[in-house]
Image (cartoon, rainbow, N blue to C red; front, side, top):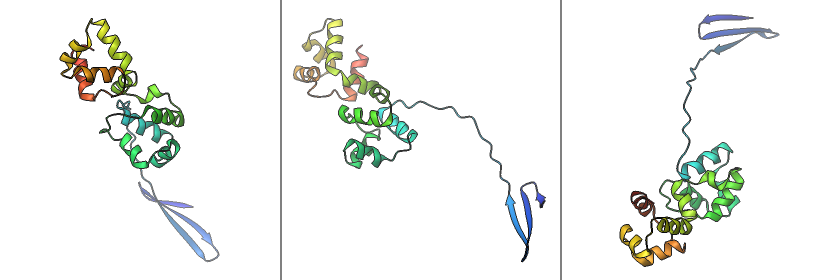
Length: 165
């Protein structure tokens, strides 16, 4: 048996051998709002999004990849400049996504940086010297980028986009 006390409270009564037992029940209602899901765009946000979707802790991912937890925490921070593609490949496997799903535009570029730069230079008919001048770097820097011994910084990548890369 129950008795509605108000719009938000009902009291249930049950008879026992020791007498009546009362159970107040409060009724709460919450409005659910339709939200727009914004797709993550940075690699850090994608790592966090897919990890949470799998209900994994940062420690779980770090242990699986074989890196220190603090390294993985940096991977999920937007201050991280570059990533180990070997680590990202393992993370993609764990999270059940492709490596491409995890990469933002910049990291997608860096993943094949040497090929991308050479193709862009040749398309525009530029020598390494001309390209270095436009980028404001030495020819040695361009060679290192094209040989993929050094990753292009995000700032230089933005510069590349400005000059039509």
